[in-house]
Structure formats: structure tokens, C-alpha cells
Image (cartoon, rainbow, N blue to C red; front, side):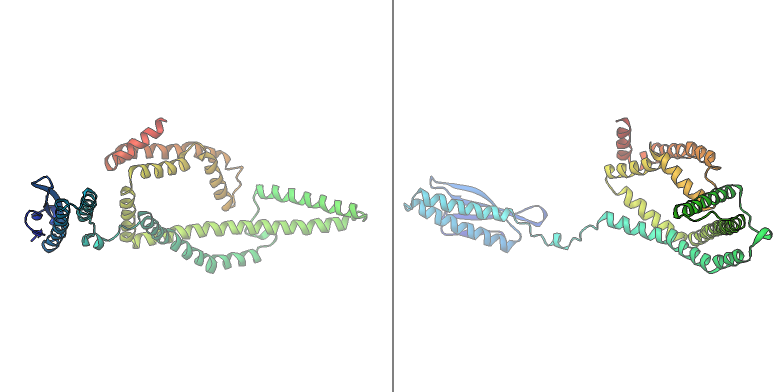
Length: 344
């Protein structure tokens, strides 16, 4: 296999040889018009194919030699020689390896990370949140609504805080000024003392009911948050193996990225949490949390400042410790890139 000949004595002979990786390589011996044989490379995928290629090249060589010796002219010799060279190079440029077609394409790493992260959030955050909200809507909210309906007057179980009383007094004074402006702008006479007292009493009762409703809602938020924490702990405990597997997949996909992508992701997260402008974000989040549970943010402002001054700094120190101890061993290139970014 791999031996081809063509077109007469001394025209072209194909001497087959075995190449690397199952590709057969041969030398095509073509006759020179000046006498002798000139070796030219050729290759084929198999023995039979190699013989056919060498035979085709041999026939071209025979025609080329006949044209050169028979007086066909130098132009005919050049044209046929170029055709022979194109046939040989076409054999070298073959890439139709069936093994490449059977190789599956590598899945997109970002899609895999998004899918794993979505399953993790679904298991740890979304499912406990839905369960806690259902329990709150079915059990806690009706009970609080019944308590609000039965809580009246000085014998009520819920009393307004000092801050709520200040807010309600300011709202009542503002309501009185607005009503006076409406009457004066429309030319109506001023109300009598009895009517004015009745109007203000009715508005005060409305504001008090509104404040108690807000207090009950804050109590419901506290109970709902407690239910969410309990359900989350129960789900994580029962699905411990699944949670560990999801975290392992996330870690594997993250460290499978290139070093630059890892460094940019870590830099983005750290700048959001402990960056230069992260203090405003921490204050906004803590303000929402404090007001969500019915507390006055002004009374908690000192605590918020101390929290912002200590907790982000502690997180930053823990992150740097992890970089110098763990990341240097897991991904040295990422640690080097982070060091270069911090220098600049």
C-alpha cells in the first residue's frame, strides 16, 4: 500500500512510507528534463488512497515529461508542473479527520455557572422565602389583624413609642394648618371650638390607629423573619449533600476560569462590599432594615456608624487573609494579578 506508479519508465514513481498518527507519507519521483529524478513529497490517509494519489501524480509527471521532451514548450511544462504541485499540497492540507467530528463541544462555562448558582438560590433562598411568606400570610397576618381590631383606647396592648407620638403630633399640627388654609382660601368662616375639637379628635384617632397598624406590621415582619431563618436552617440541614454539591460545582467552575476573569470577579465583589463608596450602601441597607422592623433610624444612627466603621474593615481583612493563604495555593496567577491591580 502507498506505492503508485505512472506512465512509463523514468516518468514518475510513488514510493510509499508510513507517517505519524496513521498518515502515510511518500515521495513522488518525477523525471527532470535535464536528466535524473527529482523527489517530491506526497501523503495519503491509507494505503489504497496513497496509491491512487501517487498514481495520479505519476500520470501528471509522465505527461509533463512527454511534453518537455516532445517539444510541447516551456509554457506547457510550467502549467502541468503547477497542477502537480497543487495536487500534492491538497493531499497535505486534508483535515477531514473523523475523530474531530466525534469530539463533543465544550459547554459554555458561564451558562453552567448561572445554572448552578440559580439552583443554589432556589434551594437556599427562594424556597424558604416562599414557605415563610405562606406561613406568615396564613397564620401571622390574620392573628395580627384580629389583635388590631380588638385593640382600642388606653386598654390596648400596643402603645405608640415616643418617636411615633412625635411623628403623629407633627402630622396632626400639619393637618390643622391645611384645613385652616382650605377654609380661608374658599372664604368659609372659622370653625367653632366644639367643631374644631371634634375634627382634631377624629384625626388623632385615625393617626393613632395608623401608628398601631404600623407597629403590628413591624411585629409581623419580625415573626416572618424568624420563620424564614428557621425554614432556611431546616432546608439546609435536610439538603446538606445537595448544598455541598452545588457549592463544589461553583468552586470548580470558578477556578476553571482564566486567572484574569477570576481576578476581575473578586475585585468587583470586594469593591461593592468593602470599597471606597461602600459605606453609603451599607447605611442605606441598614436604614431599610431598621425601619422594616419599626425602629427609628435616628435612634440607631450611632450603631449604624459603628457598624459601618468596623464590619466592612473586618471583611476586608478576612478577604486579604484568604487571598494570601488559600488563593495563592489554589490559583497563584490570580493572586499575582490582584497584587498588581492594588499597586496601580
